[in-house]
Structure formats: C-alpha cells, structure tokens
Image 1 (tube, rainbow, N blue to C red):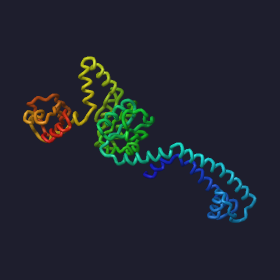
Image 2: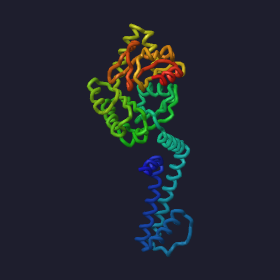
Image 3: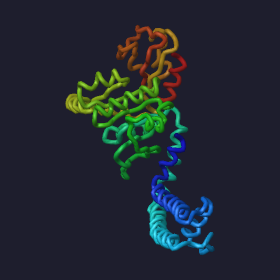
Image 4: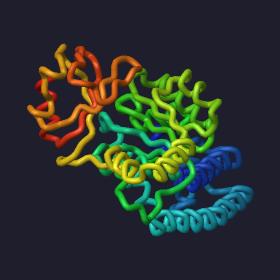
Length: 330
C-alpha cells in the first residue's frame, strides 16, 4: 500500500516507461524467435539496437533479422522522441515541482495530531477553514474537484485532492489522529457516506456535518454525526435577528469566531462539586460563566445558587489569563 501511494505521485511517467519496456520485450522476443538467440543474447542485441551504440552483432543476422532490426530502430526513433518530449514537459511545466510539494505535504499531514479535517471547500468549507486559521487550529482541506483559490484572505497549510467518502482518502488526511471533521459538501448523500466512513475509521473524532434537507438531519445523526448544521436555516434566522437586535447579533457572531488572548469563549469540564456562589468566579477571576451543560440540557446565565457538579460542561467568557485562572478553581 505504501509503494502504491508513492507510485501515484509519478503517474505522469508511467506511460513512457511502459512504452520503453514494451519495446525492450518486443526486441527480446523477436530476436529469440527469429534468430534463435538465448535470452541474454537477445537482451544484449536489443539494448545495443535501441541504444544505437553500433557494437557488433552477437551472431550474423538473417535477412528476417535485419528487417526486424530496421523496424526496431525506426520504432525507437519515434519512442525516443516521445519520451524526451514527455519528460521535458514533465520537468518544465512544473509537474515535477508540484509532485514534490505534494509528497512533502502528504508526509507532513501524516505527522499531524489533534487537527481538523474540512471536507469540501465551497462557501461553508471556506468559512470554517478561515475560523480555524484565525484561532490557530491546524487543519487539512479535502476537496475533490476544485483547486485552492489564489485570493484567499488566509493561509491553508494542508490541502488534499480526493474523495472524502473513501476510506483511503480519510486515512491519508489523518482521520485516526484528528480531533474533528467538518463535512460541508453540497449533496446530503455525499455527506452521509462521509459521516459513515469517518465514524467507522474513528470512534472518538467529533463529526460536524452540513445538511440541506430537514429529512437528512436524523439520518446523519444516526450515521454518527455529533452535530448537524443547516446553513440556510441558520442564515435566515440570523438575518431576522439582525432586524430585531442588530448589535446583539453582530456581537454574537464576533464572539463565536474571534478568539485571542484578550477575549475568548471557552468550554471546560468541572472537576469538583461546588456552589457557584462559593466559587465567586467573576470576583476571583474576572471571567463570566455563560452557561452550564448537564447532559443535553443547557442552563443559561446560571444563578449564584446554582450548584456545579463534577463532570458538567461550563461555557466561560473572558481573557486567556482569566480562563486559565478559572480552570484551576473549578
């Protein structure tokens, strides 16, 4: 499997190499049949004929042998011209450089740990990748049809072309070591197959999938998706909210996408049982507890009387330093 992957990089050289070996084998078979040469004599005669080095014949050739030699030389002239042209184009058109860069990138992807795989690089995939880039999270973009646009406002460190529904493609993207996979392809059936494949290959990876139809949401969750997002529905709700509370909606969007040392939204797991009033997070650390998640239930803006249980998920807002301080307390 390893060598098959490596052969893929040099697929552009396969045709001229195949033609060369076909010519070589044809010459060997011809001399063995026409002149009754041994294999090694036929190989030697073919090589000096194809190479046009002009050494003496192994044995005097018959008329049929001479005709066959002329044919081999003529074919070799055309094959040599084709091979040189093909090789020159391979080197000068940048195919060799692109192949070398892709090999280096694939090797680097195999070394990634705790990264995110973004499947599909349309509008939703591009937005997801940009947020990951802004927050310093390593990611791999996996796209089957399109190349990366030249005018992206952010860097894409790792890019692969391939079919995300296939096991081999996701393995090459490092699915076994990824923290999450974001599936943004426009066709729900492709997303469903990708969710099934990703969940089969990794039981721990967080799978976030796009859905276009309401009927696809339950299917994607049954297949193994942790979260299913319908961009059109969310976009419509956000536009309506901008009419009612424009500043609130813009602030929420900013909070969700822009993390830095001065402001972060962070989630963590409580490590001990404590009353929120006793923890007094805001006074002690300066960060704000926005919500508590217990199972599938969210408690928004919990009151001071709320009791935090170990294992509950806490959603905090504050600076990096404030959140690190809070993590030591709860």
